[in-house]
Length: 411
Image 1 (spheres, rainbow, N blue to C red):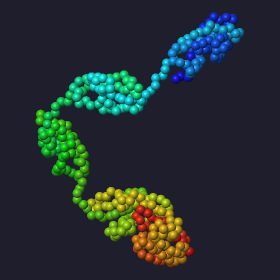
Image 2 (cartoon, rainbow, N blue to C red):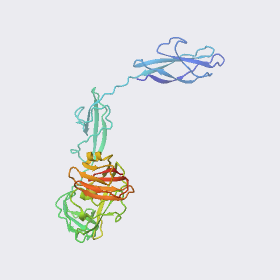
Image 3 (cartoon, one colour):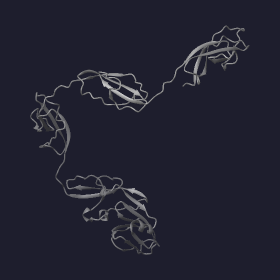
Image 4 (cartoon, rainbow, N blue to C red):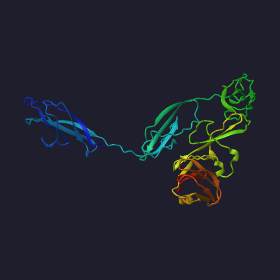
């Protein structure tokens, strides 16, 4: 229900009082309370007010015709005629949820007897979608009708939409299907695909021979002829022919994170690798620059005797390797079952995998020089006699996905 409505008042009167400007105005609804007793409205002082506008409150008015009266007064107190205008208050219709939406084709079966469109339960089905069966229709113009009924049993208008149904011509059977590679030998002269005797060969399987195909991309063409001698379009798809022979691996290389270019990675001799986890990365250098708590990726690829490189693969299918900061040797034992003692040390440190699993130990001195890189399977003493004092960076690689980084101090 509207609470206010703008109202344009057309005011006209005989100007009495030697052109006195209009000072104020007032209006009333249905009953005139008397001059000066109605609801006032303001406007600028002017000699004539043929047009003015004010908000007319409508709250509380009953549905039907009402009368609004209005008048103005000059600055010396002279009132104009009282002008009256009728207004009509219309009840706002209530919106009810849609209870049923139905459709029918061509002939109206009667309200409620159409096909349910399953678009009910909402107050607005303007954008609802449904699938109408056209199986029983004859070729030509047909009409699709639809309508809805709300929860109070009120029906909408019946909407109509014409559409055209076309008759599909009868298709003759496929007599022969043929194919060829790269060069067209002419209609009927290609290799028989063994597909015929059907009206549709879209999903037929073809096992194509490839005599004369070259290594690389080739084009496979296929077409059909029907029982009336009419050929289809000649369709083609690209086919990759690969060399099935194999060469010997002559080089393997790896790199961390960023590819330096094919042939520029670090060399890797796969012939010396063992079968355990540590053995898979026993030749891979771990840079001393690896930051704590960071992810890194290890890539590998191979070159064969024919000069062809393999794809560049993650090592052992590992998506990334986590370099874990381990604040002290006690935490290293807790996280990886590796004992390292003492720390700080004087000349020697002892490394022991307490679960009897192999671990790779990589140790850099304070100047960043690699001083230890070995696989340890049991309690082992590392002799660092004569090495510089200071902070050593140690990597312990046991699980392929985690490298533990620990700082050791030589006194």
